Length: 317
Image 1 (spheres, one colour):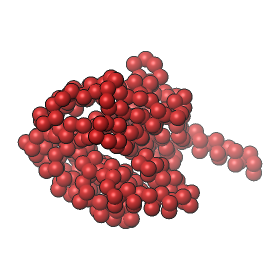
Image 2 (cartoon, rainbow, N blue to C red):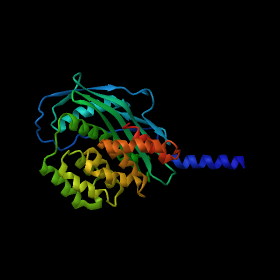
Image 3 (tube, rainbow, N blue to C red):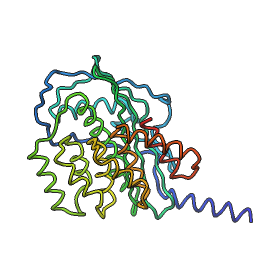
Image 4 (cartoon, rainbow, N blue to C red):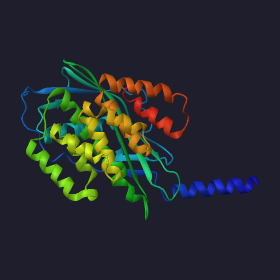
């Protein structure tokens, strides 16, 4: 019986891992194609990025399938990656922000990627998360990013690289840039460009690219909000998740009850988890108190989902 048990366990492990490699090569993120309109804030701003992670030596990726991320011929240097591509994103958005010593500081408190897979027939999933604090002359602001992506590797694990590794890393840079813009500059996508993006997503329906929905959330233009609330009901999971996340990125106070209802509803864990993320991003008194309450409730929940939800909340508390 013991031999059979060991054999079954080994078979399950092999089925789960398949031909998973020990490392993956990341591609260079492409900067956003849409510049913001000129803002009243035109003074050049400098931001010093400071690595305040308590686990600097820990592997960037962890989870069911161990692997390393490689970038430009070496193991990924996470904070250097952020700095280089934040600078490119600021330039692409026409934001007068540069990196270097100055009055503003971006502290990186956590930045990692966890993966999960139930068995060889289910999606390979990544959870990419960043926790930081933006210190400016106006005040101190928490900034966090959480991206969930999945893909079933049908032919080989090469299929997972773009959707579950490259895209989340690119979104971290873009979302972090958008949140810094909100606090420092207040730049936004023009009404015309925002409406064009809305029309394009509407025209594509469920075949729309979820990255376009994220781009709508990075617009910082409130005319996007009514459509983002509609997209929360999309049949496509990743369009929904992008829309839910974007309501938080836009700090839409009017969506707090919608997000609470999503979290307390019967939808998928992904929808409920992203609702927690959005509540954290809005960060007003009601949403913050709600996260604190849920954090207490989840202390006694040892389930996988309970642990994951608490992990999201901890990005904001």
